[in-house]
Length: 254
Image (cartoon, rainbow, N blue to C red):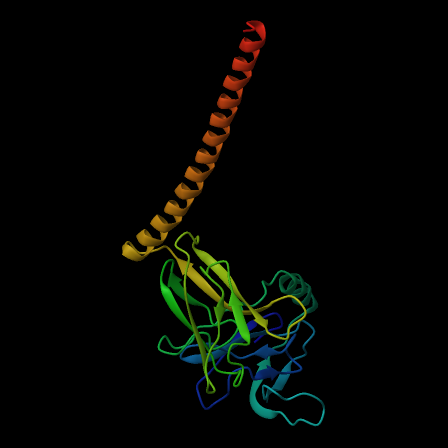
């Protein structure tokens, strides 16, 4: 490899674990292993000032922090020699590199979400199940909201796993949506907790019924306003008639 080259690192189950990081003095920054089923993957870039030689690549556990932790010597990377002109080109190239994608792809038969960036695709109008595997004992304490949901979802469960169901809005435009979490004892703003991608609604009764209910509610409100306005006009007309009758009596005394 040469300075400025970007390396994609893939690991199978057993070779590394989710959220572990790889580091090397040859890399610009550490790479965090994310799930792209069936592999764990990350990207790293060789620093422009890296000198020729072979460098160890270290694997750090997901919870390893501080100097007392001992990373595992996981691999090696060899960097080839380059000249100063190439290093200048490298610096310009590195500045323009896009940030790495945070989206992950987990096994389709696993519950959703497995992580904050476990982005699954659902059709607008569908009913989905949300699963939380990390908040045992929080039955009823966590509320989830999203612009894609038709309601606020409360996670429930007497055991280690909490679940909730919700229906996705039929009028949600295709795109990426954030799910926010609110805890019962939370004082600050809601926190991003998961993400999902909405695809166009499939033709069917579910969305037709949802749209019909929305239209019916709108029509009912319009009718109420119209009836109220009509009542005002009728009252005004009656008042005018009474006023005219009173004037007529004053003009033609008995």
